[in-house]
Image (cartoon, rainbow, N blue to C red; front, side):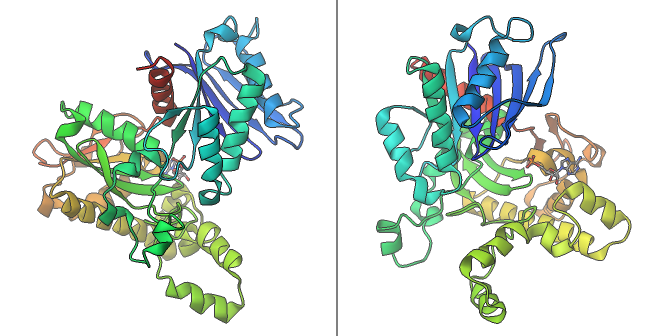
Length: 402
Ligand code: AMP
């Protein structure tokens, strides 16, 4: 079975064609500047096939972008499948499923209506995801099954004490203000892999999943279910990120807005785009740049890395307490998969709860590995995330009626 995985943004569209049974990736790429001047990138994963990099293709709307993707995939010379018939289903990454979706779902007219209802919760992302689905329907027809896979769905198992804010209850009842959590597809994928690496069933293990990338979140996964996570009503909450502040005292907003005459949009722009490790260090949102600056003695770069590791460590401790123990801590995403220094800093001082790192593993990058010492009672695992494969697996299961 071949699944086309689509991640549609407002003017871009990422795609992968993969086989979820074998895990084999056939092709991937990107449509950029949709509605502007259209740039198309195509990377077939077979030898002898031509790679296209940001070539000009007219894409006034997402429909032409999808058509360009399909043309490339079935192209007689450089394509990776013989015809459209070999694309069995399409899986869409959808950012917000609200409380309506606790799992992936076959897209129907009713589901489209429910997705529209979720737009106020993710006004920047969900409209683009809906446009991507409509474009696929327009180009591929209704016969090809399409599945929505939500960033929020995995966290719908959180208990009320984890997802409720201590705000007047009416804001939840009337306005659905609650913690939703994000990166669910990634947390689900790595926690499933972690159980396999431990030789256990997901139901048998307590895990803390640290997805540390440009956006970062930590999740407590007990018995295969998310029971708490650091992002909240929006992806701004939790640990500091590349440019996002993570948790701050809401009183700061009033203080700064009054002092500098900012409106709430300007204030949120600061919190989303000018804060995090970039804002704190004044260097960069990229942890490689921070590490270089730190090595050269830049004190704010050192502070930003320390602050990041410290806040992630606090979530690890909190979630171990919330679950009454932990079997393994997982590191994934760009920083978690590559930055041994940050992983070491997070785990340093957690010996009291049974975490003992193997110093020889600090240099390991981008491959599944056990990072803890053999006598560590809590295992520390490096698991590269693969959200596209998770989306393809869910899509295949739903499209084939499993
Ligand atoms: P992601 O959002 O998962 O794609 O992660 C992107 C981030 O990972 C980048 O902004 C970098 O901060 C970080 N990153 C990528 N490669 C490395 C590396 N070799 N060492 C440290 N950080 C890295």
